[in-house]
Image 1 (cartoon, rainbow, N blue to C red):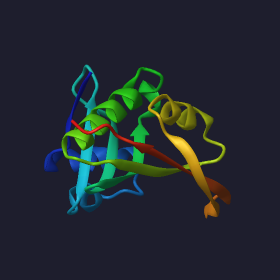
Image 2 (cartoon, helix red, strand yellow):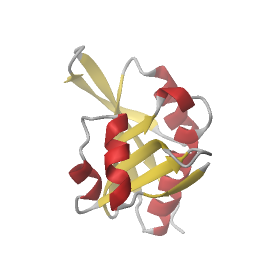
Image 3 (cartoon, rainbow, N blue to C red):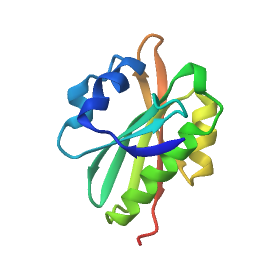
Image 4 (cartoon, one colour):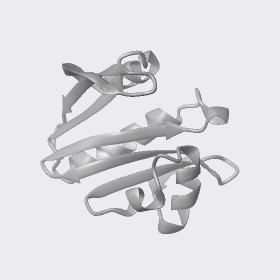
Length: 139
């Protein structure tokens, strides 16, 4: 598996994994988008961040159902946080569904801690978001 920066020609395949995010979202200013390629060369997942140093927000991490539990989300998050640290980002935050225990475990492994809650942040179904943050060690 290879993690690399999303190229414009990857945007349609990345959007197909989660149609809520269109191609323009990946290519907007102040965005860092990474993709994880599967061994067959397809897009197996992606990470999208909004970056305005010294802060960044993880907007979404998506992994295709057929390649879950193979380390793609971990690889994407590791590469993303490494790039942010090199770019002098100090604080990274995100929202995660309260019921999304696998994502919470992943973020906690990378040092994210809960710093707040956003009541009824998500819809379909309505659910609170947990606000998680971490501080990066600058390179």
